[in-house]
Image 1 (cartoon, rainbow, N blue to C red):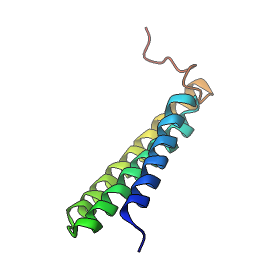
Image 2 (cartoon, rainbow, N blue to C red):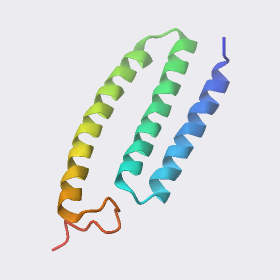
Image 3 (cartoon, rainbow, N blue to C red):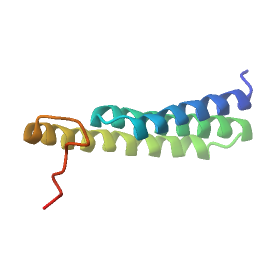
Image 4 (cartoon, helix red, strand yellow):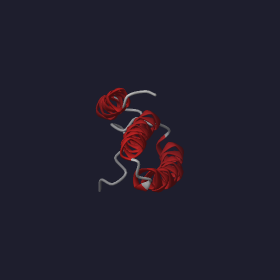
Length: 100
C-alpha cells in the first residue's frame, strides 16, 4: 500500500505543474492540456482520500468530474478549431475575437 501522504504530494505536484502551464504557456491546446492535468490531480486526491476514509462518495464525485472534463475538452477543442480556421493561430495573445 502506498501511503496517502505520498499520493497527496504527487497530486499537489501535478496540480502545480498544470497551474504553472496555464499561467506561462500561450498555446491554447497546451493550456487545455494543463487544465486537464489539474483536473486529474484533483481526481487523484479525491480517490486517495476516499480510499483512506473508506467512503465511496469521493470516487463517485470523480466520475462527475471526468464527465465535466470530457465536455470541456469537446467544447474547448471545437472553439480552438473555429479560432484556428478564422485566425490561423492558437496563440492566445493574438486571439481577440471579442473585441469590437
